[in-house]
Length: 496
Image: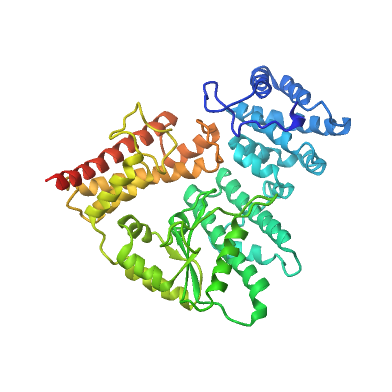
């Protein structure tokens, strides 16, 4: 039974969800839950008790029974109770060997209403909550929302960690626990409607910024204070979502490390490696962030960092047009004199013109991986996929470039109207991406939970799910086709 810690899918699978492989035991459990939830509350409680009856002490069973009697009726009041009950099943399956956690849940019935909000929203939130008993503090009704749209909240939180007498492993785990608590507070504030999607995105970005600064502080204090040398001739450049303060709950960090000259090169490379290691090493408390450094001039080859001259020469003379465009979504993360120098360089580099024809050629090469020259309702990707798919967020970035730079390749007819439409579609995709990232982990399923869809409908002011889905799919087709027309113009020019 469930005491064996079955690997149930993260969200409740639909009957036609062919992508999820479920073995016979797991499928039997899911079907039992679906069937009994159609009868009544008492039958559902008895079914939950039977799930956890084997190999658990009578005392633990009694505590679980009390929890079920309290929370199942609350979940039954929700419109989509099956999803909440399914996550309750996964939640108890995760914590049933943690007697302190069960005791805390049993003795704090006043949190059950807020707990049901978590369980009804998504499996990812349920998984995060089940990892740490301390997160229950966040869902207590009297817990004050401390998010104030200011990075100082996160900095002050990290500064309370005294790492002077801790070993490296302890530092990693404590930092991850504190980061998870802060991240969970953002997530809960969003689903509790204390903040909206845009605000949540900004808060995720502030959290990332504070985390990077804290890790740098650890590195400098633990490893370089004793040398009495001021290593300040380096900086970190953030790209993409981190660079524009638009991160999702699961965004990685696109970073480029730059240092000045060859002096103390070994020290700087060591600092950067340690930063990546602390951020991305997985411990039993998880990881902080995946770190991507492939946007550096040497891509995935060569050292982890580059010199100032290397960075400057590459982006002045050698970089691709798409890299010049990516450079416009950057910012310097660190604060020192050298960082100011890099900021000035970025400002200068971003004034250089980008060839629309070179951009079109590069986009054409990128599209080699797309199997069709057109998309329609029959061959669309999953409705919620918007990042790298045809007609998705990356295509919008390219389209905006051509239209905002008044390229000769575009159709000037109703240009301003089209730009407004691009912006509306981009905003729709942005909000969808935010929601997807608090519902799924790496193994995506074909359906979003209903509570997540309801939040998305509310945030996008769409009429219903059908309308929302249609707007997203039509947006992809529209973006893809307009970008294709630009690329066809370039192809025709090449053939002349």
